Image (cartoon, helix red, strand yellow):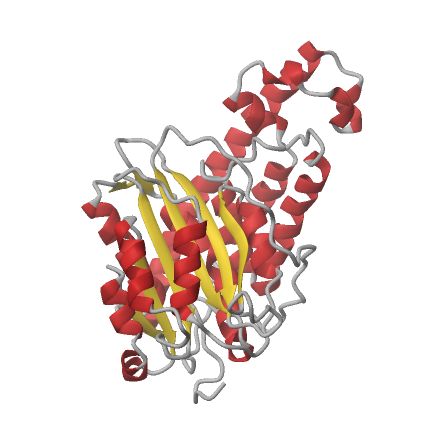
Length: 391
């Protein structure tokens, strides 16, 4: 790497962010990309987001901030509505510029295809590590455009966020051609340069954003940003623990997925208590659904489906129950879940009001904050496409 800015920071957030000094080592069991899985086209509109992150040596700060702001992104996306309905949120993850990846791949890896499994997204994000390599923006944009199952529906929102600190035009694949293809698919590409604003412009990052019908941002890696803890965090954490108890794993992955849910709570907490709370808030929203392994969500999405579930795959306390008894248990868990999610939602509103007030007291307007800028860019595009915002 030959840039002066050796530690770029991505603040994919909608508030203030920082890594706390007491952070522990992240918990992760994944180091390989998952295979794409078939998924039925949702009835509701979709919001599809692909994160393309530079994982070369100088990007440790970038990755840490991406981890810390995942749940902020999801929470903001969760406020969008189309025709009064809640869109389905899908997120994909790519890494590029890592010398652990093969030269034949262009030092690019699709870590995760577009997925609604938010815990799995977090798991893989926390599994990323950095190592020096060659960064080819045009190549990774082309791969994301070609490989991912982008929607053909005009009302759906399709976004690419690419972040890094090397010239945007490196490599044999023209970024202009790659972005032409993405624009043809209705994808908006926002570029985030980790370094000086003008240096990013000179390195074609702004040109990439213009060509990609997106926006250009730069990150000041020297800026010290802090999480804001609130008087509501502890109570939200209590309800989150109770919320976890309402999940009933089923099928071959039920047990491991439930363990992953707890593991991602812990991963979020390694960055800060406030970040863990952001995840808890995400879990109170409709975007956080787990019908592929949770019996409560499965029965809600497919009434009567519990009758087809192999009882041997259920937790021990349910294996010897009759189907009627299991249905009663599911109904009780569903009612409890709705109660806890409502409580978290109410506290989350008070929490955000507290954060907004503190931000105004300490820093005034945050027009130059990356999180605010990204938030505005998403909402601007949503407005153009006829989406509304529900607080």
